[in-house]
Length: 331
Image (cartoon, rainbow, N blue to C red):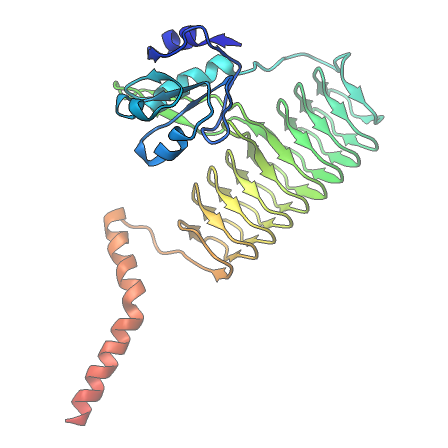
């Protein structure tokens, strides 16, 4: 728990409101409560600000008049948010062996495993050699964890899961903010990863924790080897992801989607249920149900945009030329 006055000092903000307010955590602007701090980057999210129930909001001066609660006024909201996340970050514990507080209902635990405090492991689980499980992790029943897996703090894993060798679950997401000097400031990710039931996760796959909310893998999902799932991603039930796929932060994939090997799905992209993406495709827009393919040879971005415009017009160009040719033959 932190006092708002201290938070303001830490991020060099002008405090407008109750200096003694106690803040327990950070939250998304649409979900923040009276004891939580949130942030609004710009006017695009003004409606979230006006309707916010947060105890305090980090914002710029031009949004102050629309703020219904305590305000922390800064020049660079994203940078201030990046700094304050470290204030609330729970530090990982490092130890050898199995902590006395861990509740383990399975006997098949290999040598050289690290299991931290307040970990819960269900029945009929197998934990492979050199696996590290950090504090607060919950693992259900009938889970097979192969060697050299790392499961970071507060991750929740359901029943009937296979986690292949080398998997990392709950790693920090890739979030950074620039200051005036052009230096990067890392955002500490305070969310977690929630994995449902009946899921397989391939070797050396990485699933990042959410920034404030949780990354979610829903029941029945299938992940191949070397898949990267970024922070705040939501994978719908029974979605299948082939090897080498990269899914950007905050992307949402519906149920029963099929993503071919090596595909890239950009951040904040939504795919509806039953969407299919061909391998090696790049997805940079929202997709409704259907089968999609999209890849071109690399070029300067400015040239690529022009090429895309012409590609989408090819059918109309052909129609135009056929009409012209028909008219010429008619003469």
